[in-house]
Image 1: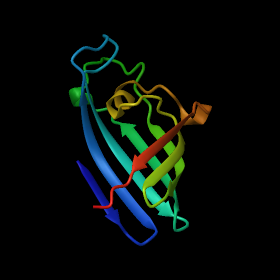
Image 2 (image 1 turned 60 degrees about the vertical axis):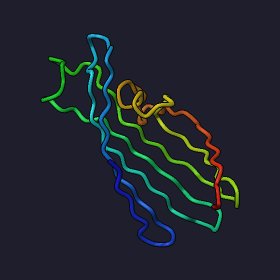
Image 3 (image 1 turned 30 degrees about the vertical axis):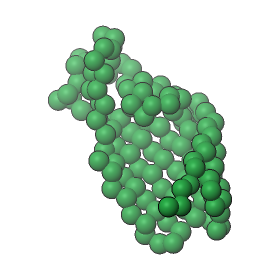
Image 4 (image 1 turned 120 degrees about the horizontal axis):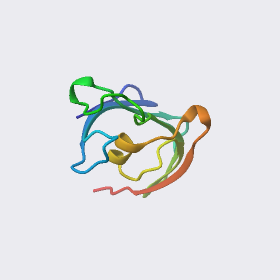
Length: 130
């Protein structure tokens, strides 16, 4: 579930909740994980925006299969810059998650922002003007 709003011409925020399930996991991991997500975009020029993201896997005792929390997944903190043209949007960002799938990041992320375990990413999006 995702809720988003454009507050002004320069500020957009989004919040969401996710449920991740894996059928086959090791004995030190849970099959299910609920996470919360916060995203935003701050427009700083007609073509440029600062983007940020925070994903936090929750530790919910009622759905865990673990007796002790020895290796819980860590939150993802990411920030970057977006450049838009009339046909494309380019994003370059830095964050702690190293998986391509959001579900993988919710279940397995062990990278820590405070220990400078950061990764660089790049996205290209084709903008269609129908």
